[in-house]
Amino acid sequence: MAVHLPALPLEMLDASHPSKDSATAQVILDDGRVSMRNEQARLLNIELGSTLATAHSIYPDLVYAHRDPDGEHKRLLELANILYRCSSHVCLQSPDVLLLEVGGSIRLFGHEQLIADIATELCVSMGHRACTRLAQTPAAAVALARSGQTDLTQVPLTQASLEIAGVPESAIERFANMGIYTLGQVLGLPDKALGKRFGATLLLYLGRIRGQIADPREPISPAPFFERQIHLLEPLRNKSDLLGTHERPLNRLTMELQQWLITHQLGCEKLQWTFSSFNPERPGDIARLPVHFARAKQNQSDFLRVSELKLEQSELPDEILSIQLTAKRLKAWDNVSQSLFLKHLGSKGHETDHDPTTLVDEFIARMGRDACRGINNVERHVPERAYTDVSSAVTARKEITPPLCTSHRPLWLFNQPRRARREDLTILRGPERIQAEWWTDDPSGAVCRDYFIAQHTSGIECWAFVDSSQEWYLHGYFG
Image 1 (cartoon, rainbow, N blue to C red):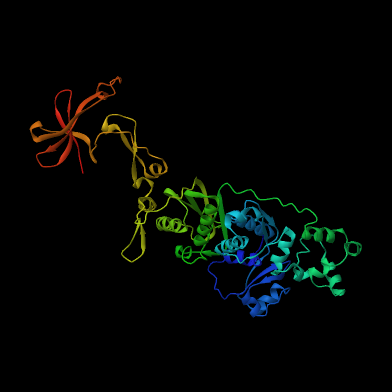
Image 2 (cartoon, rainbow, N blue to C red):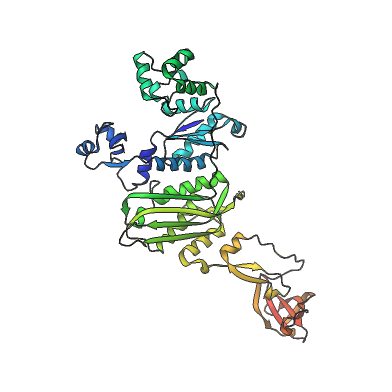
């Protein structure tokens, strides 16, 4: 399957100019001349091949960018990592095509057209228009995708990707002079005559299209972590310009992070935003915003909600020209099924998640990492020494296994036992002896207590003990 991105340079220009009006004319320049234009530029009669000065004279507010082959190749690689969801063998075909070997994925997805539909939807979610075509060979798939045709014999020679195969443009002109305009007409000619007139390069291309000559492709290696960066053509001076519609930088980047995580079956425990100004007078004007999650997240809405809270508390450069999102603290995704009654409708009629880690993330984003603390078990027999408080994020990431305990324990345990009178207690169950740390050199560390479940005269069910000196204490209340 070939995935053609016909407007890749223009779509990259869109990403670097989020504050533009949707009706703004845009062009891409190659060697100082217009090589690509959007619909608004076409309606203004800005012609392909015209100079920048001519285009500016037609529309002074024209937005333009020079062709960036390295940037386009990097963007293709980023998209290839997302399309890895559809196939384990994804290849790049510069300048604007991705190739996927989907024969091995048909059993998983059920039908090859479904794979093509998923690939198209993924590209759209990343801000790119895509044309997908299926064929038996890579070269045939590329020719179909770049021409938009469904029949290989109807592909025009001007759109058959001959230049990618190294066939000179003069060959297309010579074919036109002979009255040959489609790939089907060329395929019907004898190879020997074609070889004499047009050389071995054309024969190699035709052999690969037919599948007569091997056409191996080198697949990409999936990236070990997520890192994306947007360079803006105009500076952003307001935090509100970072968020909002899907064209905004933070929305674009978090959507790409979500798709990347789903593709690689990972969750993100920490991400980092980097905002730069590129101000030569203030080279150190960079803001780095780490965003932590109590539990690994995979959804764009989670990233945006906590990042927005973090932005409210942070100082950013006066003029932002570069935004980078990095996610390196990753965890294998555990897709736990949700309960039917996990969610309820909030005060405004919106669905609200009961996941406690959501509240923890918001507290941390507003008040810092030390604002929320969790409880962790410690392998100690003495009840008041059997737990410790730790960072909530550490608690959430660690699998806590409660200690094996066959007796009943109170929900409310006092930090220090409180002295009690025996006559105020009615014994309900017990005793249960806890004798621990007799091996320690510290006399205060050794404990020998007989615990009872009792009812206080106030009516509260409590956990009480008598120590070796026969003094009675309350250690906690049952809920």
